Structure formats: structure tokens, C-alpha cells
Image 1 (cartoon, helix red, strand yellow):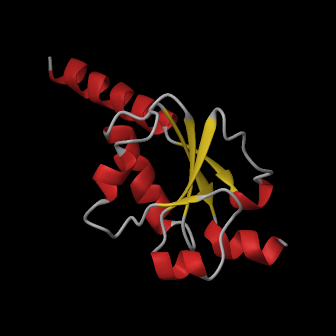
Image 2 (image 1 turned 120 degrees about the vertical axis):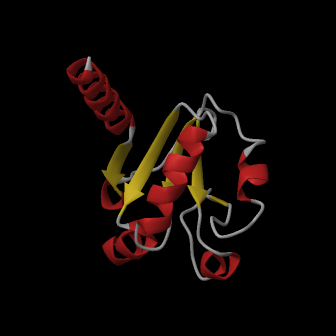
Length: 117
């Protein structure tokens, strides 16, 4: 019985990990706003210094993060980025927990995107 429980936990952990999708932000070529949403989870001050065209600014550090994302379409593909990658990874996990079905973390963050330009 112990082995069966371990096996089930191992498989579920692998399945959960497989659901977390990412791509390097340097390979991000844009998005289709009719079926996709781009979310910048940096602070409003960081966002004001520069952002990717069409991005929504929803501050990960705000107490209102959950309420602000609650109005988004859960069936659209979401791309999430921050400054370097830490907050976007955390927000990706939270968005999945909140029921969003397809969330992609743009690895490297705005700093990597900006340096590519």
C-alpha cells in the first residue's frame, strides 16, 4: 500500500510539473489579443519604465492580484513576465491554482527582452 501511495504521488507530481509551461522571453514574437493575454506582473513603477506592447500590468506584489486576474478569461492562453523571472514563475503557479488552463512563463523577464532589442 505504501508503494502504491508513493507511485501515485510521484505520477501526480510529474503531471503537475508537466503542466507548467515556459519559453525564453527572447523567443517571444508577440501574441494574438483575441485568444491570448500578456501579463506584466511587475510593479506599476517598473511597468512605467518600459513594457512589451499590449501587456496588462497586474502587480504580483499587490493585495489585489487575485481580484484583478479574476476578471480575465480563463480559457485564453496567458503569457506572464516580470523583471527577471521570479515573480512570473510564482504568478504562473497562482494562476494555475486559480483555474487558468494555459499559462506560459516568459523566462528571463523584461530585462532579457529589453537587452535583446
